[in-house]
Amino acid sequence: MAGGAGAPGETAEVRAACAAYWAAADARDWGAFAATLADGLVYDLPQSRERILGKERYVRFNQEYPGDRHVRIERIVADGGGRQAAVRTLFTVGAEEMHGIHFLTFDADGRIVGVTDFWPESYEPPAGREHLVERY
Amino acid sequence: MAGGAGAPGETAEVRAACAAYWAAADARDWGAFAATLADGLVYDLPQSRERILGKERYVRFNQEYPGDRHVRIERIVADGGGRQAAVRTLFTVGAEEMHGIHFLTFDADGRIVGVTDFWPESYEPPAGREHLVERY
Image 1 (cartoon, chains in turn brown, purple):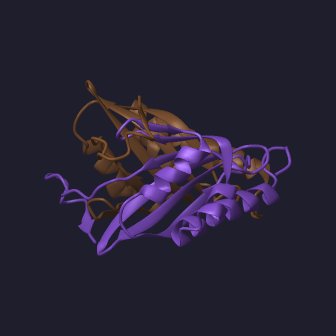
Image 2 (cartoon, rainbow over the protein chains, first blue to last red):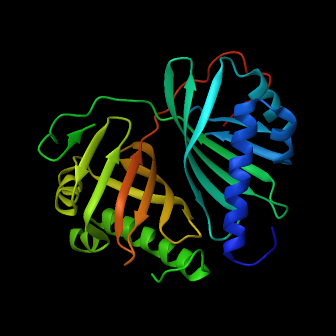
């Protein structure tokens, strides 16, 4: 991933790197997964204020994560600057479905150096806006 | 916003459009807010499966939203393709802070034609991963 701000090639590379990361996670191919990561990766979970420092721990965290998780990419937003992306996923764990939102940052070699995950839960709509909204 | 895939100018325009949208929302300047939106805007809240159709209803939804909300942009990911972005925000409503995540899509004129919002809540870390994580 060469320097410069926003060449189309960089956007495509970021998009491909996101796809490779999730494909490896879904396949539980931890060698391929680790190959997408920089050694100094920082993983943040703002909802629980948890942080994991380093690629080795982050790979273990994923290996040890309980349940038979599968993931499908819903949307990739690959920044024109070539160093960050946002990804929407749909995780299934058995019969349960979960939305995942992931902000990734990349180093100059195209490796993932930062991951911030959000896991938004379903909720019932608050009262008072039925005149404006539909349900789906 | 001209055609073509991923010119740096488009990334900058998308970034500026995101900033204008949130600045208008924060200022409760509904004229400026409406000016960033396409008439056919679709607003989705996947967590509650609510949907709002059309700019007029969406502006009203924001006008009628209870509480003195203020918003700060934490991160903008502006796609190299020039038609979508992901934004992380921090909302404050009185003393309460809330993470917001927003996926925006743009029409050919640079107006917002799709908004998908997520509101992830805080949670306690599950047991069993203390050997890998730190708290912050």
